[in-house]
Picture 1 (cartoon, rainbow, N blue to C red):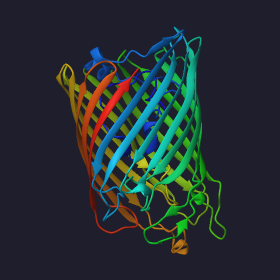
Picture 2 (cartoon, helix red, strand yellow):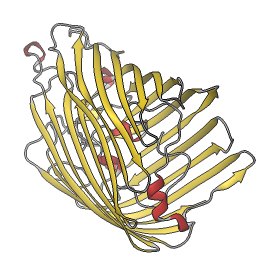
Picture 3 (tube, one colour):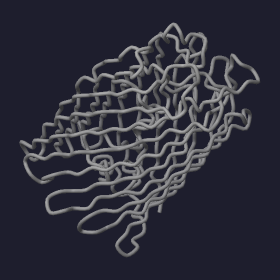
Picture 4 (cartoon, rainbow, N blue to C red):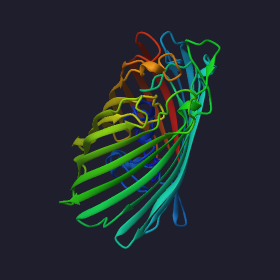
Length: 438
């Protein structure tokens, strides 16, 4: 879980976890970065430096912990057209242990999230994650490794998912290994390999099939990715990157009488990585990707691929962040023919006072879907062509009482359609949260 270790920033995050088109991208590193390296948002930490939790130092390790309790209200707990309102009781906790050595790095961390809806108990959900990883320096090279286990849920208001009466549980296991050659040199190479296994162990209850639970094991699969990234550093702040990436998707539960859905993919990307401390941070990777299905029953899929992030601090008290993603969706919410997704997120954080942070965000997400091949229409693999669009936004105020305590008031709104339903619907959420840190 790339972004959760090293430090728990007491500033409110720009974007909520559910806003991402690729939910898994919040746990794993951006494309083109080495495995096992701890990412810390230095500019975000600077805005609230005086109130940063110190953690506990245990010999050569540092222990960080965070407990968040919240109550609130949602006007559509089902996240479907005609959904029912409910109160929300939220509990989130995370803990991380990171080495504090002069060389090499080892970390382990875990998190848990529990959401309760008193008026809609069927929407209750508990998720948890755990990871261990790090890196070992070998002369001027670096070997990075990471293993993560995620126990998550699929909900209807996520790009690529479909209408379900209650959240669908699934498990993700991922192992990754990278080797950065000449990491401090002007030119470096980063070969990487990872394998991710998706397991859906719970049936889905659909609005169109009252009382019937549809098994989801047909979505179980392993995704294997190999990549080679070349980085050329022309200044201390700027680098150019080129990446070649291959992807193999192998389904582990075939459906009798239907063609296999295994596929191979290839992507070529190039980009820049620029970081002017306390001013501009820009990272852009763009290129073209193609997915080849092993069975001719499914047409090949091709689209541009983009992953970009820009952070700008116009003043020492204000920061803007823009994230853009586009590509073929390979997340836990993929359907048989896949789909292309676009995800745009714009966030603003302002330090209103020494101990008060104000933030807001806007999101736009769009999924474009292919039609199911004619011979599969009416089967469990049916996928109608069309699109899914989500507009969202939110506001947040955070009072930093001390290094160990903060209070938060959050409001979020989204408007969208969901696969398997007609029309659009809006979800409004208000939360009051108390955050405790070590």
